[in-house]
Length: 366
Image (spheres, rainbow, N blue to C red):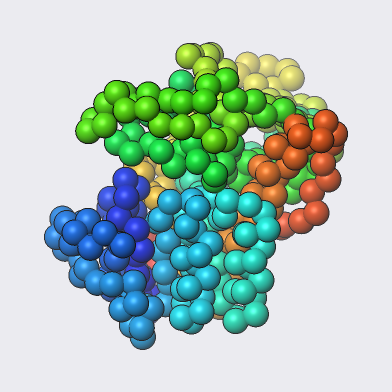
């Protein structure tokens, strides 16, 4: 098997999850890991048995084909542009950028240089969400009518050791959690046509509840409760709420409504979960999940698919066009709130091809 070299930039909280996931894919060769904090990079490298190096060394390494960008959101585009200028493909943590304009700049640079951009989330490639896609594509729900998407919690400062970036530009519940939900909805229903919404902030500061900074107060610079409607090109209308201000709720994460049935989709922040079809006539049906990547945390699946795509000269699924479309939709909620009007979405994107085979054994060479 042809191996594709990757270099990782950023050793924050999510890096260990990626490093555990990357080890499952033989096509990927970790050439090095870097961080502006060299001590952090050394500690991470020692834990996972990979080389620690500088960012410049990763850019200069001819064996590195893809830079996996795990920096904080406000650094995503700058780090990505530098990698592209070094001749590397880029796979970024979500969101693609802090603003739509930034994200478009990244894609324009990649296109000009003949390079690829990929982006999290890749959870829509998980077995449960690919099964949901198959149910919709088979016509089991009939014509899609609408749906709901809910993520609501009291805030990430309860558990994250350094939660500041969640409340800075590029953070907030929509840019942090919205990518999981909206990407999965585009996977299921296709692109969004227009958005209406409201964005609010109820507190100017947050108090950290986790160690080692328990009790420290941090500022809030972004809306922390965003709610609205997405009208899809296919005619479906989906209600969405992303919030860091809700003590608790009983909404399911994701539901898709059709003329013949409702599909209950599991949490799009995970690769697996239980699916249920509630038909117009008859009893509720649990939908078995037989497709791969439904058990465990497979973050980096999108990187592996991108590597297979490079090796086999085919499109990758968690691609930059998809991420840019989702970013435009997320930004549109704030624009709609500020203007008090519906906002048209300018980008259009094809639904990614279904993931119908396992990457582990190399069978997905197409």
